[in-house]
Length: 470
Ligand SMILES: Cc1cc2nc3c(=O)[nH]c(=O)nc-3n(C[C@H](O)[C@H](O)[C@H](O)COP(=O)(O)OP(=O)(O)OC[C@H]3O[C@@H](n4cnc5c(N)ncnc54)[C@H](O)[C@@H]3O)c2cc1C
Image 1 (cartoon, rainbow, N blue to C red):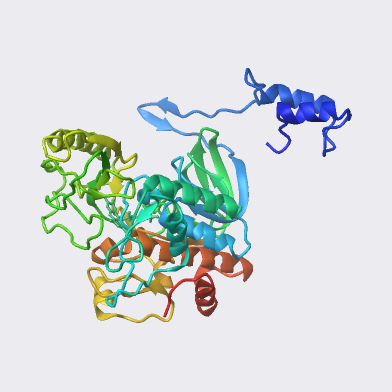
Image 2 (image 1 turned 120 degrees about the horizontal axis):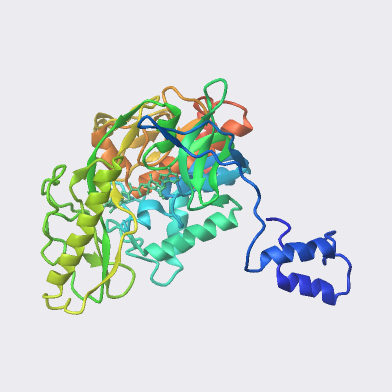
């Protein structure tokens, strides 16, 4: 609302005795009218044509209707997780207009809202940090915040972040970069032009169903929601879905229990099999997890049973069962010396979905490639050492095999299921996000399709932006 006038501004202008609002050509009479709408109370309503769904013969139909255009932009990034924030920032640094849409009211995706606090893998076998760039900038900002991040610069130990500090850092970076954010805004459809290319996306929010027109879309939703809606081929996969929590007022820690994953300061992963689909949630034995940057607060990472992240009924039931199990675990934990007065500091606001859709890309990166150390001409970065030694990531696994004007970034890129379990880790999502953002910007500036982007230029800009490509 560019002409909105606050009461204070209005009083200032009246005191100055002007007939026009100070510093503007807005007549006072119209400013006064606007002021009426700026204070609390009933508002004038703009008439809207409603087109509700209809029910007839047991069939629900939604009539076709024109959508208002919320914004026209250069790069539209859908999803504000690790990949989406990196993509938005890297694209914006090339001077293009960037819009970032996120379904929740904060940024960071699973790294903040999922309470996934350990950032790994960052290092190669020589304990050299091989993931730098925008992700490293985020961590450097966290370094400056008291209780923002611990275990930094201590390879092979991995850093652990504070989720609230991380949300703050991301808000700062996005605001400073002058990126246009739409939060609490859910991408529900793709917009396709007459040639079949993606030209934006449709969103639902409290403002209703609206469209954003874009030159290039980066699907960083984690679940490939936009490329699926646009008709790009993908593979649907199911995986474990956990619910991470933070427990306060503890001065003990543990790493045991088959339901654990990586905890602070360790690369070890529990060896127990993941609970299968529909299996009961394994009973935690009063586990308290490991330290976070906040004093006396631990985090409890977890795997959880396999479930279909795209099935709302299944994940709803699972989330409630997780919450019950976490509370029961807390009560058991309170019987342990050192955790007698433990309290539930937070259960993650969003469930821990690992994988749901994997793009069918120009290249499908495979575990075989990773193990063989395959080199790619279109390399955009490295993974750190994890299940395999650090491997190269090619640009072509972000590019759909069939769809134009869209790139994928983060955990929904093109990979086989085995390797996707590594590619989905936060630092690697930073790598694919940063590259997708740069490529999207180049495609606008060079007036080419994302699949035709000059790879040497992409690599040069990645290096200029601090990324590690050797
Ligand atoms: C339980 C668990 C433990 C893990 N442990 C670790 C670990 O220890 N270390 C590590 O590095 N990684 C870990 N991971 C993996 C890592 O957290 C995620 O894979 C990573 O955050 C993925 O980043 P992303 O940006 O691709 O997706 P996400 O983090 O999922 O972000 C996607 C964003 O898009 C938004 N979004 C989704 N759909 C829409 C839509 N339709 N419209 C608008 N916005 C949308 C979401 O709200 C979210 O903010 C773990 C994951 C889980 C689930």
